[in-house]
Amino acid sequence: MGGGSIGTRHIRNLLRMRPTVEIGVYDPGLSSSPVQDENVHLVMGPDVQGKWDAVLICSPTSYHYGHMSWAISKSIPCFVEKPICLPGQVDLSRNDFLAAWSDSIPVMVGYNLYFHPWFQEVKRIVTGGKLGRVVAYAGEFSHYLPYWRGDRDSYSRHRAQGGGVLLDCIQDLDLMLELGGPWNADTGATIRSSRVGDITEDSEDIALVELRSPSLKSGMLRLDYLGHRRIRSIKVIGTLGTLLWRSERHAPSGEDSETLSYYRNSLVTTRSGESVPLIASSYVDELRAFLHWVEGGAAPVLPNPFRALDLLKERAGLW
Image (cartoon, rainbow, N blue to C red; front, side, top):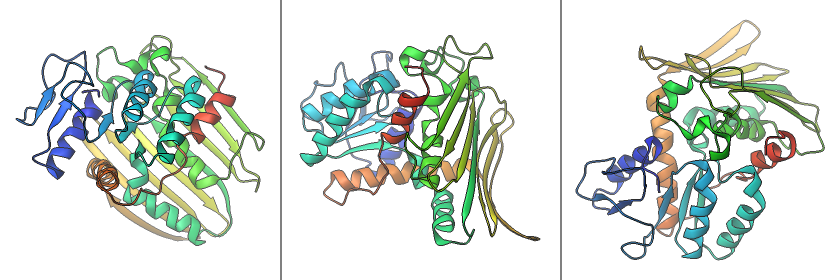
């Protein structure tokens, strides 16, 4: 469901993994298949052509809950792109999600960065004690919206459609919660956001999230749609060292770099790579995990898909 950029990426990955699979694409905005392959075709509605083995929900955020609810009602395993729903739909969505799990219907939310090999390395270092006692976290995601979503009238530009940098970048918030938890509504969170540019209609294009956990660790995350050079970074500060994961890309020029650095006193250890293939591998690995589950394997171990939404609903004041 949904044949935009992320839907197209999943279709191509699926064809590489399962070359003979039949893929129906439901997207009322398309007049032709987004991928030219004999096994990929448009369908006029989700109920057309009988029961599907699985559904990938890649539609705009405002449709996620309705599409997921439909799939669960048909007992069809579903993969839902992030976020799982709008903040105002959290309670309804959580009920359906838990009902699906109790009925052994696979439902997975697409937080691909959990499958990123370098994020997994960050988690191992943080939990393994190499940094000593962790005292602070800082994160950033900056990307120029027209480079990211194209010049078309993207849903990201409209709050009612699930747009805005807080929901679009909810995965970055969830990474902070994963590394710095446990967080909850009683331990401190401040979210400030606004529209300062002219590339959205009414959705926020910049946001700052400040967090504090019971163990007095502080976290800060900055998000925006405005930076002409895409930057994603996470810095973890401990009593014995500092860890910095940083990705930079400038789409028009093709510049692309990714680094993971560990600093301790005068010592620096750095790994370098390119962000595009590393990100691409995370999408492949998350889809492989979902297919493994659908085909009878174990469910992947993933975080609560509602914790960042609960925080936004409680503190952002936008919905």
